[in-house]
Amino acid sequence: MKNLVLLGTIFLMMSCKTETNEFPELKNSDLALLEQPSEAEPLNFVTSDELKESVHYLASDELQGRATGSEGIEKAAVYIENKLKSYGVAPYFKTYRDHYKVKNMDASNVVGFIEGNDPVLKNEVIILGAHYDHIGIVKAVDGDSIANGANDDASGVAVVLAMARYFSTKKNNKRSILFTLYSGEEMGLLGSKHLAQSLKDQNLDLYTMTNFEMMGVPMADKNYEAYFTGFDLSNMASKMNDYVGFNLLDELPKAKEFQLFYRSDNYPFYKIFNKPCHAISTFDFTNFDHYHKVGDEAHLMDYEFMANLTNKLIVAYEAMSNTPTQEIKMHE
Image 1 (tube, rainbow, N blue to C red):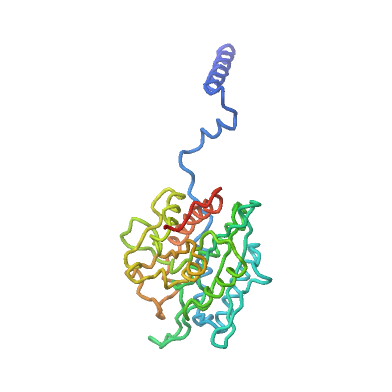
Image 2 (cartoon, one colour):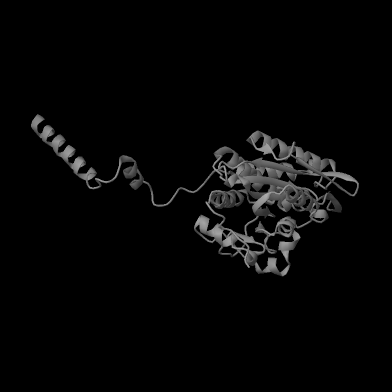
């Protein structure tokens, strides 16, 4: 019995040696790579719970619809500031606030900054933004007069905050990233106009800008997951699809018909910088009936969908922040 065990052990050792020598030019670390699955595990950093927490607070009755200049929007701004601070995201200005006046009222954008880790590429900036204001108190319907603005645009703010948490945790972006939350959007893109001009005056080297608008409900019967305004103006959507390896973004004909590219906070940046500045949304005119109504409530958002989409978008922006050259360009 002992002899049989000894022979078996010798045979096993010889077999292992033979298998390893099939790749004599590879190191142990290389062999480890051969054992990895062919497809990378999906990114699961952003959770539905964190998105739900942000949307439920921002769209709560306590904030009274977040009208620019109101007590409610100030509470929203403080919430956003505290989130960025807790993530370790630095303020871009002396504080997180970018102050401006609108109709004799004090208003402000909230701006956080993560510097890139490459000594050269960090001078190029990617902006990720959304507006945190809404339309406030409106004509009552069934006793409810608060336009809570869950989809418009607490959902977009939640996505930006989740991305800020990701990049502040990973610290793997060679280019710098600005996280910009605007007030005054519902009054005519006033916050984004002010911030875009301020950044231009500081000679900011803008690479791309994305505005996230109404991200809370999935589109119906589409072979892509979100639409991209101004699709034909640059190669940004196609490059982002390349970065993730599937058709994540596409053009929505209705968005082009209603000229949504010009009606959201990406447009002031495009107008002032003439760089790829677009909006991403999932509101397709058929999947949500509560635009600018009191029914735009937090419980109607699909948080699992939002988390899944945000994680996929993070993959694209992570790649965008690390390419050695500027692959994304305006079309001639």
